[in-house]
Length: 184
Image (cartoon, rainbow, N blue to C red; front, side, top):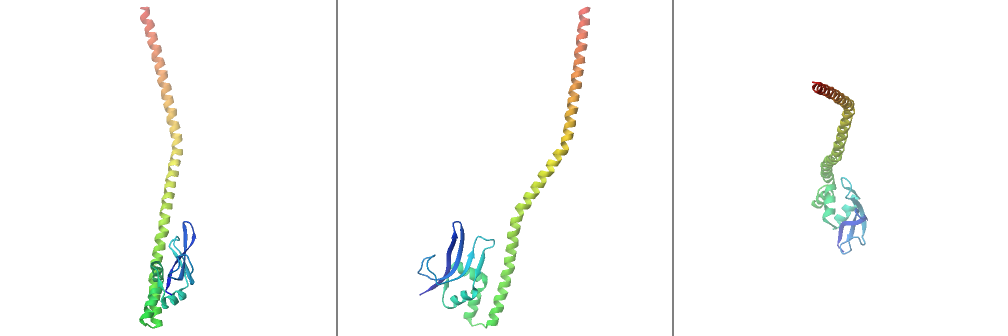
């Protein structure tokens, strides 16, 4: 019986969760499996993996072939490196040192990814806050400008009233002039 380390789909529609299992390769994807060795949550930022590393190494040492996705997961955790060094015949202390160095490099990389993901989420929020502040400032300027506009409107109405008075006086003068013309 050839064993494969692969993903088994769990979760519901549009929200996948995968179980990392050791299964007979002839069985269906979601069918019967030998052992469940972990979980993979692809939708979380960054993707989360919970894995029983000892059992994964046990299955690798006993000839289980990982699928492409599981191989990638194991590689990122340093288990493929551990398995490779063990097959080469390296000493356990050397293997642990190499794996620790690899995990430190991966941890630094993961921190950079988390920072990038964190800033990606903050940029739109910051832009929205800045836009809200601009809108508030414009509203305050309008509130301050309202008395000025009222003053301008009052000045315009006074000008119109003065123009109306001036035109009324001009009309009276025209009428008076017309009456004097009639008298002559």
